[in-house]
Length: 159
Ligand SMILES: C[S@@+](CC[C@H](N)C(=O)[O-])C[C@H]1O[C@@H](n2cnc3c(N)ncnc32)[C@H](O)[C@@H]1O
Image (cartoon, rainbow, N blue to C red; front, side, top):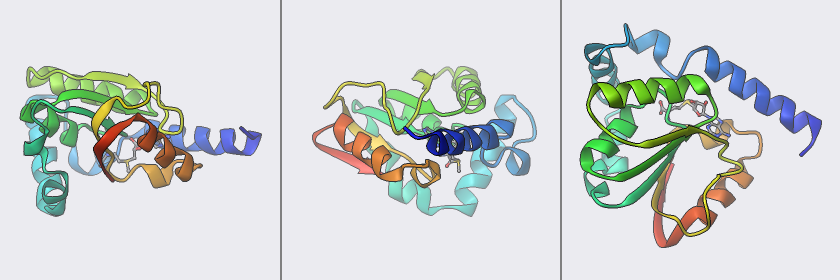
């Protein structure tokens, strides 16, 4: 790992830790109503996310989301009944997603983590999902290699 790479990673962290994606534009508070309104805006403005992610197919599958952000998609996977894991580079996104899931009585295994060095064994997940994240990481090919490593043979990926 070069110093330049570490500096870029730190920049990415600091940028998203000041405000999670869409926080200033679409999140007006930290209660259920605020997260519901943010999700409503998200899926109204980007209806193709639902079509792509097919959250409803996650029931009973072991799913990892990389880069949970405010946690709207993570909530969808949890509501669908996935055995769910989520990481984000930033403490802020993990805090948002933890709060959000708690408010709705949902469960996930959430932690800070780096897409380029996933802290999971090989062949762990049925599905690895990531929306708008991997291209932000300084070594995107390394992050994609990690997705392949943790996916079970025949598992799915989405980004
Ligand atoms: C554009 S936001 C997208 C968030 C969310 N997926 C969404 O669609 O709203 C990018 C997110 O990726 C996270 N991120 C960037 N690089 C990462 C990395 N190497 N590992 C994990 N998360 C990362 C950022 O912290 C940020 O929360």
